[in-house]
Amino acid sequence: MAEDSGSVTMSGTPVLERGRPVTDAELRRKADWIRLQTVDLIAQAGLGHYASTFSCAEIVATLYYRTLRLRPGEPRWPDRDRFLLGKGHVATGLWPVLADLGFYDKVLLKQFGKVGSPLNDHPNMRLAPGIDFSSGSLGHNLSVGTGMALSARLSGRDYRTFVLTGDGELQEGQVWEAAMAASHYKLGNMVAIIDANGFSGSGPTSQAMNIEPLAARFAAFGWQVREIDGNDVPTVRQTFDTLPETGSEKPVCVIARTRKGRGVDMFEKQPQAWHLGLLTPDQQADVVAEITARMELAEGSAQ
Amino acid sequence: MTTPTRKMVDVFSDVDRDTALRTNPSGYAITEIAAGDDRIVTLTADLSNVLADFRKAFPERYVELGIAETNSVSLAAGLASCGHIPYIFSMSPFGVLKCAEQLRTDADYNHLPVRLVGRLSGLAMGYFGTSHYAVEDIAIARTFANTTVIAPADPNAVLALMRDTVSNEGPVYIRIAEAVDPVYDTVPDIARGQWPRLRQGDDLTLAAHGMGVGLAIQAADVLKAEHGISADVYDGAYLKPYDEAAIADSASRTGKVLTIEDHTVNGGIGAIVAETVARHKITADLAQAALPDVDLEVGVPAELYEYYGLTVAGVVTKALDLAKG
Image (cartoon, rainbow over all chains, first blue to last red; front, side):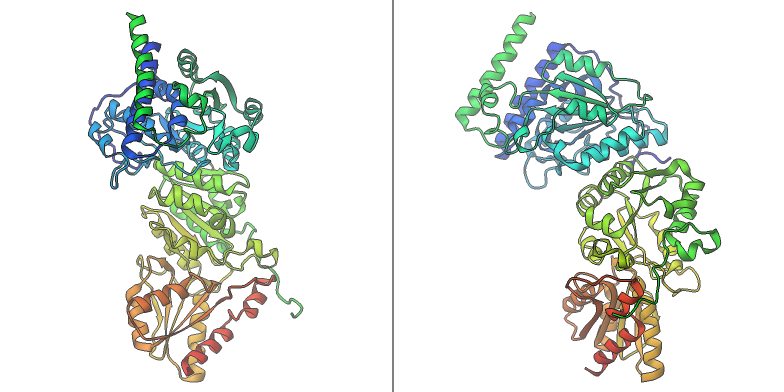
């Protein structure tokens, strides 16, 4: 087997191993920091997906600061765990994380949304270091991830492949083709995380096209299902800490019940209005104040 | 229509190795090239029989995906992003038309070495019905910026061009013509983007791909022997990139170009020639032996080819009209 499509060097850059030590309080703080960064980046670009990014902030924070095996200095290191953002419209929340971990210089964030920037509203694997696959067209990435997990089997590598999808995305038929294939090929090295925030672009997911019962459906497709509160850091952490061995034979589906717009009262009350939008300066000041106050409160109680 | 006298060619049967290259050239070729490169894997969506030899030789490198073409393309892109070279064997109507967006967004935009080997292209599925035709596939595939599109003329050309695909860093669509007569006595040497000139002439130009190449050669021989008309004949197997210089040179000399293809008149080699002639500001008369932009009839392929003039006689007639015009 050849190595990954990028060149592989023996540069000796550090590997961030799985299960890195971090407290739940720190992960909560990271999730809120992702929210603040998202607000800034959207203000810079002029339009963005607040509520969808906020619903999965705890998931992204836990994956990147604890769970995933990464090598920021060598983004295409063949043994890295893969993370695919099926719901590509929340890449805004990922850009500051990848910069923070050293995949690229933070100065790139200043170019977000501008012509020629490697960082866009949806992620492009050819432009942004740390992006394992491009996304934007919903329904593709569970198939792509199945290919990556299958590749691990063919090449004898022990990386995991995580795919984060929305719940509305599950209305795409191709998702279920992939769900069948992952189960058929016994890809226990694969984890689908459903950010089940209950909304798609134009309204409640259940009103557009009912996709429930999700747990029963994935179980019927041969997946091991865990249904959790996806905004509760200890639960998310514990779920990812106790994934089955990569050699196991059932793909894992984490149905993360989340709240769209989580962490900002205005977004939670009107998640639909803030699926795609732009805060006014006054609104932005209120949103930042709300998140910052929560972070300070958490810090104060920890001392 | 007349009572059918011809039968569907059985393109699904497993065959012995002696006849494999003739009847299943892409299946033969992939088995040969996979022996030299362990990055190669194959995938099908319920088309495993065309890979009988490959499956015997490399069972662990074969991925069956059931009747789920879109999944096969995106999954192949995932494999390719991890260093594999996936060859998806698919029926062209489903592999290209159904999966156009997966090919574009997952393979082409990401410059990944996904290969789609399209069996049963054009009218090859004959009486199975128009759902099984792929007569718009070239028009679609050649608009993808990073995808190479090739349509070999015969089994030897399939072998030559499939060998070339291994080192291609981007996506490739290989359009297989079924049950065609040999054009090349041996495996040809076709450089990327070059159109071999198989006959040389001054009066008109014949340009074709796939099954049209054999027709063009035979028509050129008839034109010369019976009508004293000499024609340039080009094998346009490389539809992207294509041989712009050859088209411009020949069209400038002959002033008359007839294209032959089992594809609609829209977006195939006819369009390639027309675009090139226009871009080079060449004055030339153009004609097409191709499928009309209307609902198509259903029937045994050989009879459909006669119906639509995709025969030696049909090409000769169009060529004479063009030559006289």
